[in-house]
Length: 128
Image (cartoon, rainbow, N blue to C red; front, side):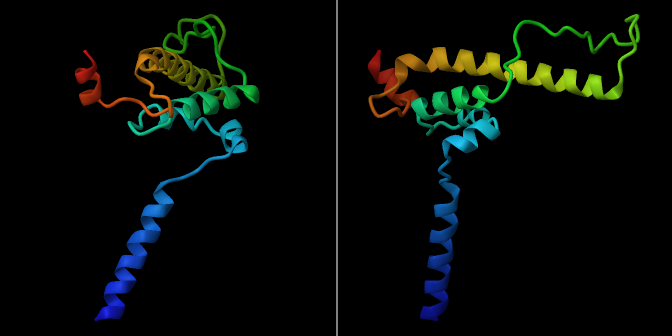
Protein backbone atom coordinates (compact mmCIF):
# COMPACT_ATOMS: atom_id res chain seq x y z
CA UNK A 1 0.00 0.00 0.00
CA UNK A 2 2.84 2.37 0.85
CA UNK A 3 4.50 1.63 -2.47
CA UNK A 4 1.34 2.50 -4.38
CA UNK A 5 0.95 5.71 -2.42
CA UNK A 6 4.59 6.70 -3.05
CA UNK A 7 4.21 5.86 -6.74
CA UNK A 8 1.17 8.14 -6.99
CA UNK A 9 2.96 10.99 -5.22
CA UNK A 10 6.02 10.54 -7.42
CA UNK A 11 3.97 10.55 -10.66
CA UNK A 12 2.10 13.70 -9.58
CA UNK A 13 5.39 15.44 -8.80
CA UNK A 14 6.81 14.55 -12.19
CA UNK A 15 3.72 15.68 -14.10
CA UNK A 16 3.67 19.07 -12.35
CA UNK A 17 7.37 19.60 -13.06
CA UNK A 18 6.76 19.12 -16.78
CA UNK A 19 3.99 21.73 -16.78
CA UNK A 20 6.51 24.42 -15.87
CA UNK A 21 8.27 24.55 -19.20
CA UNK A 22 11.44 26.59 -19.53
CA UNK A 23 12.20 27.82 -23.01
CA UNK A 24 15.50 28.88 -24.52
CA UNK A 25 16.12 31.75 -26.92
CA UNK A 26 16.35 29.30 -29.80
CA UNK A 27 12.84 28.06 -28.92
CA UNK A 28 11.63 31.65 -29.03
CA UNK A 29 13.05 32.17 -32.53
CA UNK A 30 11.41 29.01 -33.92
CA UNK A 31 7.84 29.20 -32.58
CA UNK A 32 5.56 32.10 -31.60
CA UNK A 33 5.56 31.11 -27.92
CA UNK A 34 4.73 34.71 -26.99
CA UNK A 35 1.15 34.16 -28.21
CA UNK A 36 0.48 31.69 -25.38
CA UNK A 37 2.52 33.71 -22.90
CA UNK A 38 0.27 36.75 -23.05
CA UNK A 39 -2.72 34.58 -22.11
CA UNK A 40 -0.93 33.17 -19.05
CA UNK A 41 -1.69 35.22 -15.91
CA UNK A 42 1.53 34.00 -14.26
CA UNK A 43 3.85 34.91 -17.14
CA UNK A 44 6.98 36.94 -16.61
CA UNK A 45 6.42 40.18 -18.56
CA UNK A 46 10.07 40.60 -19.52
CA UNK A 47 10.30 36.98 -20.69
CA UNK A 48 7.25 37.43 -22.93
CA UNK A 49 8.80 40.52 -24.52
CA UNK A 50 12.06 38.63 -24.97
CA UNK A 51 10.18 35.79 -26.71
CA UNK A 52 8.33 38.25 -28.95
CA UNK A 53 11.48 40.08 -30.02
CA UNK A 54 13.45 36.87 -30.52
CA UNK A 55 10.73 35.43 -32.76
CA UNK A 56 10.82 38.44 -35.07
CA UNK A 57 14.60 38.26 -35.49
CA UNK A 58 14.13 35.21 -37.72
CA UNK A 59 10.67 35.97 -39.18
CA UNK A 60 9.18 38.83 -41.17
CA UNK A 61 6.73 40.80 -39.08
CA UNK A 62 3.47 41.54 -40.92
CA UNK A 63 2.75 45.25 -41.13
CA UNK A 64 -0.22 47.29 -42.26
CA UNK A 65 -3.26 45.74 -43.80
CA UNK A 66 -3.45 42.73 -46.08
CA UNK A 67 -2.49 43.26 -49.71
CA UNK A 68 -4.88 40.50 -50.79
CA UNK A 69 -8.59 40.72 -50.12
CA UNK A 70 -9.18 37.09 -49.19
CA UNK A 71 -12.91 37.52 -48.59
CA UNK A 72 -13.53 38.86 -52.08
CA UNK A 73 -11.21 36.61 -54.06
CA UNK A 74 -13.92 35.82 -56.59
CA UNK A 75 -14.48 39.53 -57.25
CA UNK A 76 -10.79 40.27 -57.80
CA UNK A 77 -9.47 40.26 -61.33
CA UNK A 78 -6.49 38.14 -60.36
CA UNK A 79 -7.13 34.53 -59.48
CA UNK A 80 -5.36 33.40 -56.34
CA UNK A 81 -4.15 29.88 -55.78
CA UNK A 82 -5.22 27.93 -52.73
CA UNK A 83 -1.66 28.26 -51.40
CA UNK A 84 -1.76 32.07 -51.74
CA UNK A 85 -5.11 32.20 -49.98
CA UNK A 86 -3.83 29.97 -47.16
CA UNK A 87 -0.71 32.13 -46.76
CA UNK A 88 -2.77 35.33 -46.75
CA UNK A 89 -5.06 33.96 -44.06
CA UNK A 90 -2.09 32.84 -41.95
CA UNK A 91 -0.49 36.27 -42.35
CA UNK A 92 -3.74 37.99 -41.37
CA UNK A 93 -4.02 35.79 -38.27
CA UNK A 94 -0.41 36.58 -37.30
CA UNK A 95 -1.04 40.29 -37.93
CA UNK A 96 -3.90 40.13 -35.43
CA UNK A 97 -1.68 38.36 -32.88
CA UNK A 98 0.96 41.09 -33.29
CA UNK A 99 -1.65 43.78 -32.68
CA UNK A 100 -2.98 41.86 -29.68
CA UNK A 101 0.52 41.50 -28.22
CA UNK A 102 1.33 45.21 -28.70
CA UNK A 103 -1.94 46.09 -26.96
CA UNK A 104 -1.25 43.59 -24.14
CA UNK A 105 2.29 44.94 -23.69
CA UNK A 106 1.04 48.54 -23.37
CA UNK A 107 -1.86 47.59 -21.10
CA UNK A 108 0.23 45.46 -18.70
CA UNK A 109 3.29 47.70 -18.47
CA UNK A 110 2.02 49.81 -15.52
CA UNK A 111 1.27 46.64 -13.54
CA UNK A 112 4.65 44.93 -13.89
CA UNK A 113 6.50 44.26 -10.65
CA UNK A 114 10.29 44.47 -10.34
CA UNK A 115 10.68 40.72 -10.79
CA UNK A 116 8.66 40.79 -14.05
CA UNK A 117 5.48 39.27 -12.66
CA UNK A 118 2.21 41.04 -13.38
CA UNK A 119 -0.07 42.24 -10.60
CA UNK A 120 -3.25 40.28 -10.09
CA UNK A 121 -6.65 41.95 -10.38
CA UNK A 122 -6.87 42.15 -6.55
CA UNK A 123 -3.48 43.84 -6.34
CA UNK A 124 -4.52 46.36 -8.99
CA UNK A 125 -7.71 47.22 -7.08
CA UNK A 126 -5.73 47.75 -3.87
CA UNK A 127 -3.36 50.03 -5.76
CA UNK A 128 -6.16 52.50 -6.59
